[in-house]
Image (cartoon, rainbow, N blue to C red; front, side, top):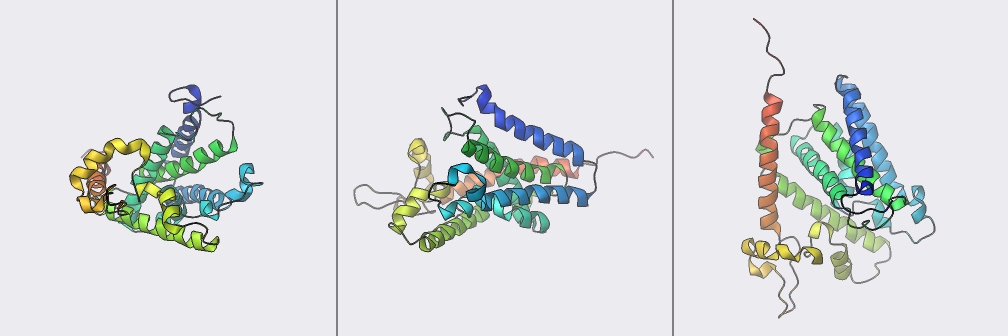
Length: 270
């Protein structure tokens, strides 16, 4: 099956992921908290394992030169996969909010816009790996919320962008370390610009239409200048609009969720 937006192939893997998530929810919803947490921990650890060992698990990596970066926290989804077990077992409400919201959103966005594979067959190992890792990330984050293992708090909405920015700093540090470990090949600035996780260094070509909105919020000193040759200043070129976007979205997601969580499940007859 060849994947195109809206055809059967496009919905095949997301459908399986939704069925898997629904089945887990139905099986666990009346179980003890310990059982829920144990099953979700197993799902998250399986995702961590496939991420760390992808070089050995997936045939497309067996005979080709392998970039060690692919098994590290080289982008936001990879970072979320690696921290998932620690977030689940930890008690930090802010990090849990961050993981639930960003993990669920990352799963939805990657499944909704798999542009790398449009026009290709879905029967290939890299497509399977893509949906497996993002699907398990989506399931783990969403089920933490649906199974009552975490309650969203709107009090944290304004703090979440700072965790996003911190994540970008950690990802960049990770990429610099891997660049050095692998022999420091190529100019570091060029390498980081090519990686460009979460648009940290510059806007991608296919989304240039958002630049007018970004210019509205961002001082010109942080934006690229073709006359002087000044590049985009990493992170600062979009930190203001990104802060506003994350804060507003988080507020409108957390507010109704918090109200539902605080609503009594039943009223006792007096």
